[in-house]
Image (cartoon, rainbow, N blue to C red; front, side, top):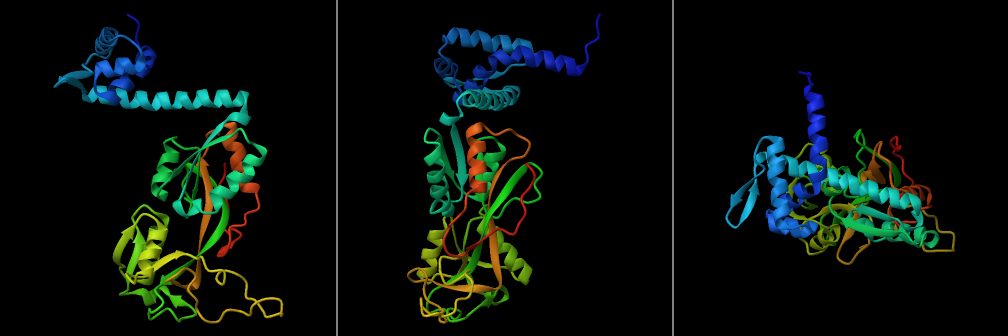
Length: 343
């Protein structure tokens, strides 16, 4: 009798399971043999026979009756989850092959933070499509945590995030710009008239922040920890403009990106050609005064992708465009000071 190593047996079983990947994934998604069969365009008896054959092949049941449908066993759930991941990888490969033939008609799945949808993303896409009108974009917005998770899982090609995930060996990236962060307070607040404010002076203040998983929340928590106090969180949101609105309503203060053209820019002198330097804090947005922090605080906005994985031609072209394009993002920005990570 010929000896077969466990590794060889695993490879042989995987090869015999491969043709049934779509069925396993469909059963795991629908929880019903009939609906899975309809989804795949095969007769229901054929799907049932294939599931029974798979159970015999594995040596354990994959499904059990559950009411009018079925439920996956633990073995079935393991195989169904692996089938879904494998089919996703195959779909990505098929898309790459198609776009390799005609990269001008490819698609880029782009993730980004909500705030970056105001200027950065539209500006970059507009200029890119001037030269690549056939490339399509699928856009996904969410928290930094969600966007990086989707990137790692292969659901999106590129993400624009801040701060960048430095030190993560699974991800590569390129910084695009540094954005100043300031303290946003209501006009009547005790700190509204200050030229600058130290983070330590926020101890005891009610803070309005984004939820855990957002980059600004991480920065705010880290700032308070470094200053030696526990932040008093009054409200948590999912979008920075909502946070800004809560500040304007007098419900707390917040660390937010600067929107004030008088902040984050080099000092001006009165040459007679423009307005003199601003000396008194002025609301940058109705109901909100932005006070610079001491020392000045910046976060780095960058584009990230999975290290070591080949991007589709369209995604690679857009990444290179984003890294090379001159960025005019408005007030509060400066060239990046954080180095990029290897591809």
